[in-house]
Image 1: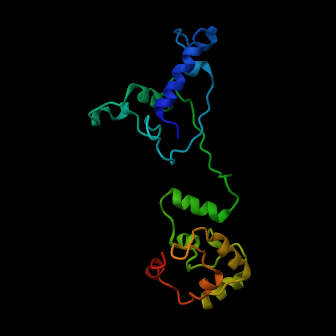
Image 2: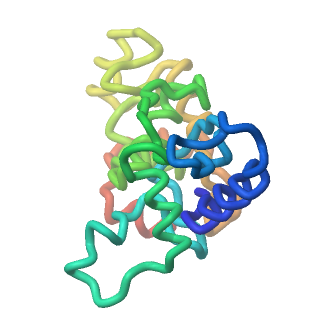
Image 3: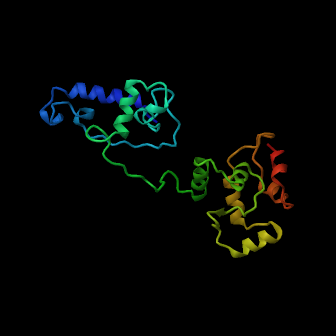
Length: 206
């Protein structure tokens, strides 16, 4: 994510470049508008890692924390934060939250990414990624089976066997290599774990 300092520097440079342009780039008091009067659209995700330096735009601005901290942030960092969180002219005027992910059409992978994003990766998702035994059939995603077979559920509950579609889905979900051998576990290896390998037993394969 862009740091607050870099955002402030961009604003100040554009103000300087556009300072001699027509009055349309200035406010009623004659001050050059933010970013030299150029309309700017910000796109980002506050779940991203903070920038290595320059202050995070996702941090609470120093003016709101001034009473609770010993030192104020650097002026350029405070400037960048004010652009995003301030009010009135020169600050962001609105926000639209995007709720539909278009990065991937893989429903299961999107589910896993959302779990990781919130720090709540489920045991079954972890096991799928590592090619370990799971408590659900291989095509399980969002509380249903993508194979759409009720018989598959019954067979799984009875003998821990799954249909060919579930086997293919399980294999496709194995994204992490086995640390011990450097190779992925096969479906045959998984089917041998019909005795419901416990979580502690699974950990021994790491």
